[in-house]
Image (cartoon, rainbow over all chains, first blue to last red; front, side):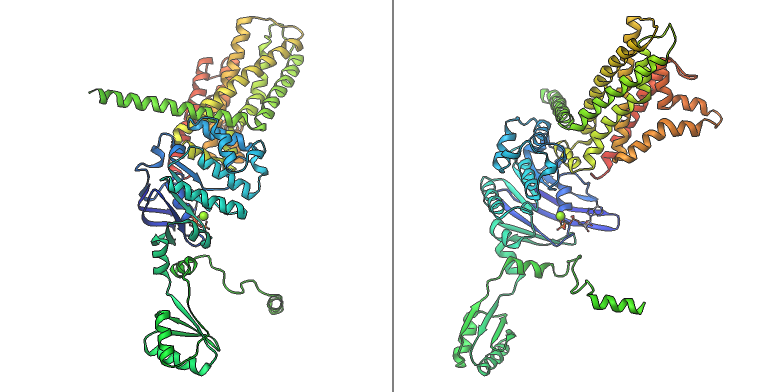
Length: 320
Length: 256
Ligand SMILES: Nc1ncnc2c1ncn2[C@@H]1O[C@H](COP(=O)(O)OP(=O)(O)OP(=O)(O)O)[C@@H](O)[C@H]1O
Ligand SMILES: [Mg+2]
């Protein structure tokens, strides 16, 4: 159980986390979404007491992280893939962590086995690939068999097999009644893994609810229509517009209709005797909902064609 | 009534246990890095070299075999051992290890205490080993000397204590500065540059005697113009604890 109340963090002028109030419930996988720089990692650093909030509070199982007697037994956190000293072996890294919280040393081979790193236990962490480092981070998070898991982009760098493993694994952890809070940019992945999603942008809460709720709130269902007769489609488009729907031509023979249902479009087409070859209610996706929700809070967006092409660069030279 | 009594007791026990675990973790981290062992070997080699050279160059029938060990400690060994203490902090800061350490031991003062205890003990023990080696080399290299077991043993212990205190001072500095380069600069400044700068100032000589370098000489060589041997020890203690205190204050306030 995580309890954030008015959590705010400013770095100088920059407000990284802005008055965030949130409960992350046990027994569920909660996804944490937001554009680059939205404040996800900062929120996790505030929860674990690495950074001090400017105001507000973050409680883990009702207590500040720093007040936990054996924090690793309560919270397993993966905040940074490169969390180990590069010249220490994976085994020693985990052993030191285990000792720090009075966790028996036999847990170390167990978690190494669980994440598939048993064979490289005696290799230095600095020699690991990103995915292996990520697995080591997950092993570290599991060390204390914690009730709360905080994972910052855990599948970043994992191979498909690893991604799937993390998905089923997190699911089973949540089913055991643990609190699982993970950030990710992989929408399709979260749609499969998460029960709830929390979306933030520029440090502020944008959405918080079940995946279905957020998708419903964030998207407008569109109906795809295709037919062989442009004239008939034009007639249908007019009728739809009269009925208050929004119609877009997506091709000479295709319409995208928003603000109505497939049933309604079908009925209107039938009444107007318009032949259709396709009538399809488009599946709303988390990705769409996310993009719509965060469209105003993307800070670090790429502008189209930001890299000047050779001709333009050449011209600039001439002008100079 | 009993609850009111047992609760603080229970908390003290929990704190002690937590500190013991934190020390165990620091120890595991220290011995699992190859650089630790290289530095130990380096400290021993340097001590052997300097002590032998000192022995050869000393022509004093009253010299103690402990003298070359003391000279070695003052002229390099203590710095090698101090860098061991420094790396315990800056080596973590340079990698993701610092965040991991705080996730494991979020109480910053406890973490700092654990580091100081672990590194203090390790440096003290290594300092003693170096001093022993230095005395052996000294005894072999000195043409003539006067051996007094108690006096020599006292010198060796003094070297170990000195190494531990300078290591602790360095650890505190490192925790404030966080980077190796900055820590080395600060330490060299404190040991070598500030004394040079203070020397011409009126009353500067006294101040120089109170600095870590002056205090080290007082403690190891038996007094400078201002401090006697115990005064030197006291001054070193104040410097070491002062650095730790500064580190505690700073790290409690600062983001990781
Ligand atoms: N130590 C710091 N000093 C100054 N600014 C910081 C610091 N840490 C984070 N920020 C700023 O706070 C904002 C939030 O950063 P954060 O890392 O939390 O974003 P994020 O949501 O994790 O992004 P990403 O998806 O790229 O991982 C960014 O604008 C970042 O520049
Ligand atoms: Mg991040």
